[in-house]
Length: 180
Length: 457
Image (tube, rainbow over all chains, first blue to last red; front, side, top):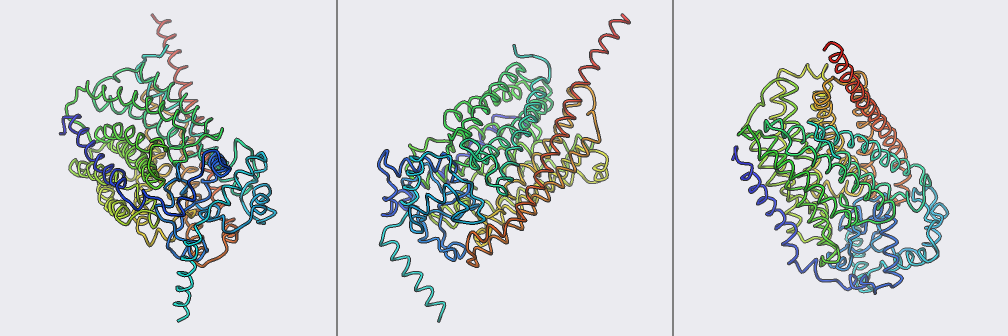
């Protein structure tokens, strides 16, 4: 093999293929990530709805570079009150995915639960007025239509009522355990 | 139209690379500055998200990749004891590649993104970039095919593997989102590219460069041929499985998580192996780092490589990840491979190769020294600011400190990062100026020589 580049290339290709099979092909057959949860269905926006257009605005302005949509069953996330832990099926229709990798700003997985439309709009136009000291830039350059759509999208980021109840019960249980 | 001159491909790819390190890092510095003054240059085109994406894509695929191709257009023919298969094609690929990078850069500023980190260019750019990479790979494979030296030195293994893996990995990661069944599946495919652009391109070409440079710069043979074989096949076997650890503790089934985390930790084996080989080769030559800047860049690169690869497996432990994931720490870590390790080895490669091509030594030794020290000290300030910030931030989140307050707490560290980043940026002007002067003087000297010869004849 030390004299045959083709042999090096063939073995290199085989090893690469193993990695693809394990981390890309096999997950295709996993039910957990490929079937939508009820909350995941809520993100299956109708074509050209305000939410679908708002999602485009979110992507085009790079919101995902600072905000994750990714809640973990970890103290860092539960203590920040991020809401129900996200499941694979929540992202069934999240294409391109907006999981994110950095929290320069807070997680937005269920941000629709937290503020109303007026707050969201105000925060986008003049972030300092709602969150003094924030390092979020203002998005006052967006048109009214774009702002409306983006707010509609942000407000749609909610779990189903059942999922929320379930989560609250879990939290209460955990808390009463703490008190014991 | 395209020149056939010997070594012209290598030289021109290096020149383009240095042009892009200035542009790419200015995008990075703007990103860092926007975290201090969010309204700076804030508009539809240069909003934070666009600038950050452009920074990542340009430093990886413009600066570093072009410097790699420049190195390979010199090292591969040298190791094969032959000429580049086609210098013309190499120069054509360079022009094409640069047009594609420009397209991608403007696409990002004009809000077109694929969202995938390390693969943010839109599909129409991805396809062209694939063709450009293909042209480079074809040219270099053909060069190896014409080799006069039968034994394949270990650098060639790394280069051949990388030139095969990059285009394949690029295809998996940039697969059109509408054809993928779910967001998490796309996340896995995106991170397959995200991690393997680092593992099977940046790391492997970089390690190949070091294997070439160390024996040349020290004048001593490679410490162990056996170790270099083991290291290569271990990286090839395990690195490719690393993608899923980016979604760790998240919405992926446990088995996928394990399939990603275990190989991440096993990677300690090839890292130890490769470094033992590097530092074994250095035995008795350490004092040379005092006088030789290229050697010092190479050795500093191997040290940063060690630290990047100690952090990596550590971060792949779910407990460690639960503190530092999503914090500034990650940003510090993400710069150690691309800047600390492999930009450094590429600087060394440039300082070693350029004088051989143009036929005169680098114009200014002082500028090289300044380049090294500004890069190194700047990077240390930059990285330690981010690592400390990340740990503080991670524990503040766990404590339940309100988010906005954690942002305010980060202010001094974010400023430290920008100061370090400014030094890293300034350093590159010493490189650009020195390269410009060297090439210009070399041309002048050649002309004078020709005139003298003409006069005496």
